[in-house]
Image 1 (cartoon, helix red, strand yellow):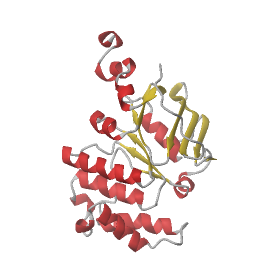
Image 2 (tube, helix red, strand yellow):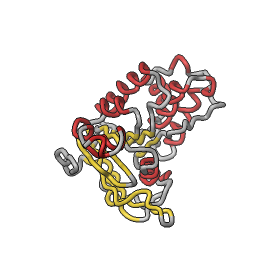
Image 3 (spheres, one colour):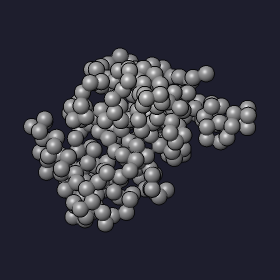
Length: 254
């Protein structure tokens, strides 16, 4: 049985994924998946390796074409738009494998994205936006450091700052807690809650269960390309299918 909470109010939904499927030949990687994320909501997406989580992220971001279904941002169908058009409509993303410009400084990494935003938002001051983000993410003291000289936890903050520099309304985070120490993960969680409180919507793929369950308002579990359960963290953790996927066979938890 799928757990659920109250449906989001009309007009408050930022992301709608409606019946999205992805097939690679005879392999169904994502099978008629539907989910939604409201403004200012943090939603977790969990599932075993190979469940289709990153493929679904790629569909939302426009990197992977869907075989069927619709993706909407703010009620607008973006299913056929290329990634750069989706970015302009408010989709930002980080990656499971760190994607930073290692030979650039921290400031230059963020400034690149702020300059790109300037192409469609002439009101932005890239230098000011960069300095504001560096201060907010506590990276200002590291602004002149080459990114490839920094620990992975700090590099993840740089990647996040670069995504935020394009002023997204939806942030797709793929394993953002990967490689973080306990303190760094707690700091990241505080930052994401602050961003959500400011109205940013977050869809979070994560294997760190304490992190995702402690941070998310709602959680969906994807297994073999299918949404198995959606609900509050407590509802999802109590679901036998979730316990089976993470703790062993269905017989072991029944």
